[in-house]
Structure formats: structure tokens, C-alpha cells
Image (cartoon, rainbow, N blue to C red; front, side, top):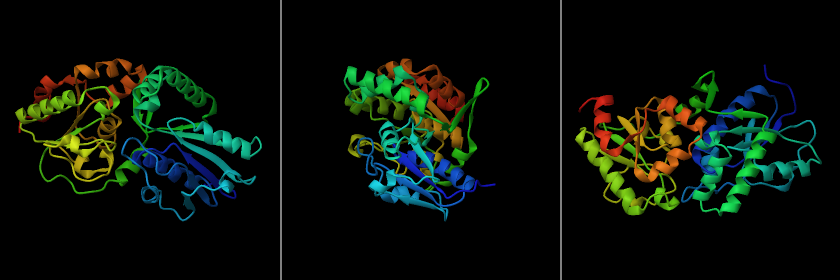
Length: 338
């Protein structure tokens, strides 16, 4: 039965992508069923994102759970930080607790601490101090700033979090999918199904992050396309939301702007191919889409940077990675020759 009370205010922080909204929506759907009264959600930083990707107000409202007691605010006002006593106060954060939002809530509440719920940001949620430091360095941070930032967010994650609401849960010796989160992804699928069997490659902005040169990356994609052709499959490229599409001139692209996990054009493909990405993991674990990991020499440092938890999570739902030169054989072994 729902807990009785005057309602709750949820401050949502850290949203940088549409998939973050899906993770958050799964917890909000759970939460509104547990409480009585209005659930007011205040979304911070609407308009933020990675690279070219931006989260706008329309996406926030389109992806919120449809419930008469759940109200969403995207225009943050000073009064939102001052929560009346008796109203449940929750800081809902992506990946790690939003320390700035937490501090402002505590100051506005004269010491009252919010309940902190952390939902996934993907593979990064299962990292450690080292992996976060190296990720911040790849994003352009200085060595010192990356060390300090990684230390602050890691400490905040340990000390402030009351509940981890994760798509992936570690059980004794294995990983399982939390069905409440997976169901949110499945019910949000949009777009047409593919009309012919094909392989879809999920790109990453490696040239923008300095992991691979532009020329090397395009050569890598060409090699993937050649290997798919050798296995009797056409290759269609699904660019990362943060990338310019003109990078992939000469390649057939998946239409639409929905994230890969929410696009029927990708979910219904014969196979998805990529590196160690959250999207590839989610497609395999949530939608059971056949998936293959490929490697390249330039990606070796990223492979070694994985934590043991990240590696075990990937291995639980994805086959072992293969070099591009072995991709055709892997495709034929897993799917058969077309």
C-alpha cells in the first residue's frame, strides 16, 4: 500500500542524455506508487548535454511517467529549494549524488538532509576512482583537476547515497537486470522496425576524445563494413548523439534521433556491433538484440582501464571482444551465413 503523507519534492540533477531520463523515469514510476499526495519533480540543467546532444523540455515531459499525481517543473525557482517540513525531500541524481544540489538543499533547509537516490549513467556508474579520473582526463580536464574531481564525486557517492536504483544488480557471482528499469526502456521504443536484415554499428566520438584520429576511425569503420559484407550483411551506422553526421559521409545511417536503446530501427536489427558502450550492453541485456564487440589497437588503453566490475558486467551480457579482422567469422558463427 502507498505510504500516506502530504507528498514529496524530487530534485532531479545530472541529466545529460535522453537515456538518463529513462533511468530516472523508472524510479519516479516506482516512487509515485509508494507515496500519497503530489510528487513534484524539479529538473535541473535542462538544455545540458554531451557534445551536440542536448536534453530539452519536450523530451523531459515526453519521457516522464504518465501519472495524475506527478508534476514536472523545468523552470527552477528559488522556492523549489525550500521544502516545507512534512514534505518528503529527495535528491534524484544520475550516476553519483549531485553535490552542488545537495549542498544547496541542506543550506536552504537549515541542515535538513534530502534522501539521495542515485540512478544509472551507464557503464560509468560501475567505475572507481581510477576509472573516473581517466574518464575526466579524456574529456579534457587537467591531471590535477581530474584527480580532485574524481575524489570528490567518489567520496560523495559513498557518503551521501541512500539508495542505488540501477538497471544492473550484482547477485552472488553474477549480474541480473532490474525488470522495473528494463521495462521502462521497452515501453519507450519508437520508430519503424527495419525492413531488411542488417548490421548496425554504434559509433563513439573517439576522434573528439582524442582516442583515435579521424582517419584511423574511418578506416576502422570501413574494415567493419567490409567484414559485414563478407558475412553477407549490409552495415548501417548509428552515430553517437553528440557527433556531427557529416563525419559519416559515404556510410548508410540509421534514421531518427532516438537513442539506440529506444529505436526499433536498432533494436530490431539482425546484429549490433560496437565497442564497450552502454548502448551495446543495454541492447543485449534489455532487448536481447544479438551484439558483438570489436576492438582496435587504439582502443587497447580503454580496455585496460575497465574496472573489474565493469569488465564482469560487460562479460555477463556480451560475448568476448574480437579484432575487426575476425568479425566476419564471428558473424557467421553467431548468425549463420546469409
